[in-house]
Length: 382
Ligand SMILES: Cc1cc2nc3c(=O)[nH]c(=O)nc-3n(C[C@H](O)[C@H](O)[C@H](O)COP(=O)(O)OP(=O)(O)OC[C@H]3O[C@@H](n4cnc5c(N)ncnc54)[C@H](O)[C@@H]3O)c2cc1C
Image (cartoon, rainbow, N blue to C red):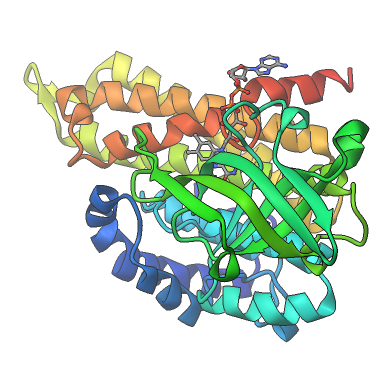
């Protein structure tokens, strides 16, 4: 199983994939453990990623991006996950934040922000979740109150990926609480000029340890009105609904790569490991377990490939993206658990890649909209 056999892959993408694979092996993998300890990557890693075209690959060249498609973002997710390096938060930065700006920012803002994001000089984050509102985003309390030519932001956010390092944060806020979802807007905060903005703890997680995840606090933070992702107030929910399917596909791709890497690792391990005078792979239980895992990974590859073709044709609907997200992540956690079991005690040791895959995979059933919420989205179409 390899992306090279996928129907959406092209010769250009194979060249891109080779370059990304080399960069990941050279610049990310050797630092992973250190970043896990410090709970964030070095800022320099973002600049290096920018130099090799790993940031904003699907943003048009006129805005400093790579001029590619979502397939380029997909390759990056697949390669980083496959290599067991999830610390550099490219999925949120390039796959999500840059696309909100491309679609909803003004021409002047795109020129101002996107080239710097592509170079890794500005790091992006999106702040939807709050301590009291995750799945139920309509319950957010963050306020953006208009005062002259500024919005004044008050409230707090939590679990924000890239939150410690971010320079540009898409803040989901209520501009008119009386209007419910129609009173929700997205405002872009430039952290360099944000008096009253404060980062809280870099949250300690059980996995994805090298990727910073932060609490954010806003106390009368003034943001120019032109930083509203427009054209007008109240469009925040529509914008989220339009962009979330892409985020869900990124998570499904990560789940797929996790399964494939877990299988690769485990097949090699059980072939070498001797138990009761024979290879662990010779036991029927091992063979059947791995046969099941390989079948699941093959079905996941087929489904995700089909979704990828739909994304690239602009035809992926939200419920299919939700199906891909919940099903792939659920199966990925099951496959990784089986694979870890076949490693015995070594599977529980961080020096074996399966341990990190296991820890990193768990959150995929929770973030990007929990799997229960995904099933709600699918159920609404019954
Ligand atoms: C590592 C990490 C990174 C994250 N990054 C970001 C980020 O960058 N930006 C951001 O905004 N957020 C981020 N999040 C937040 C994430 O999106 C939320 O955690 C997620 O949406 C769930 O919200 P919650 O944690 O408040 O759980 P809750 O909404 O409290 O849910 C708790 C449980 O109840 C279930 N549940 C809730 N509603 C229903 C329902 N209607 N039917 C059935 N079950 C239900 C949920 O599925 C879950 O199992 C991140 C989270 C993590 C852990």
